[in-house]
Image (tube, rainbow over all chains, first blue to last red; front, side, top):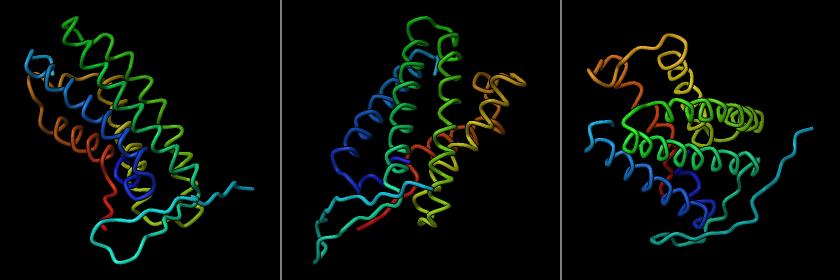
Amino acid sequence: MGLPMFRMDRRLWLVTVTTTILLLGAMGMAMRKGVG
Amino acid sequence: MALVLKSPLFTSCRGCDMPTQIKVEPWWAALTVWGVVNAVNVLQAAGFLSRVRTGSMAINHMLGYMMAALAVPAVVALTAFWRARANWLQWIGPLVYVVFVALMVAVEYLWPVEFRSPARYGILVPYLVLFFGAMQSSPRSC
């Protein structure tokens, strides 16, 4: 659902990139703690 | 009567000779999908952080209800795309998300089963593939 916005509105797509990085970072932290 | 809007946005991409006008019909459905994916990203990030902080799935479990509820706007956008005969690249993301929510509700709420630790790959693999597939699907290249 995230990539179509790349061609529609680059600023809105960058918001999605930011929240995706947040998600992956949080997932990485959880996996390192053994609760991922 | 369905509200159909066209994006007024124009964009260009590197490597292309001509600027590309992007028309999305309906535009509000694309915005809805964008809202859903960002809400899910933030909710699940909060869920992961709650696991780190508390060591339990309790908060993540509650956030799961909100992620399941986001299937409603996803279905609305999906229906709008289908009615507008939009390109499949527009509607595949919300469709995969709805399938993911159905699986999540089944294995987390209706018939709870531990599939993360120890890993039950028959559930874990489709669970992760559907989740990340829904979040990032529908690539469109220049």
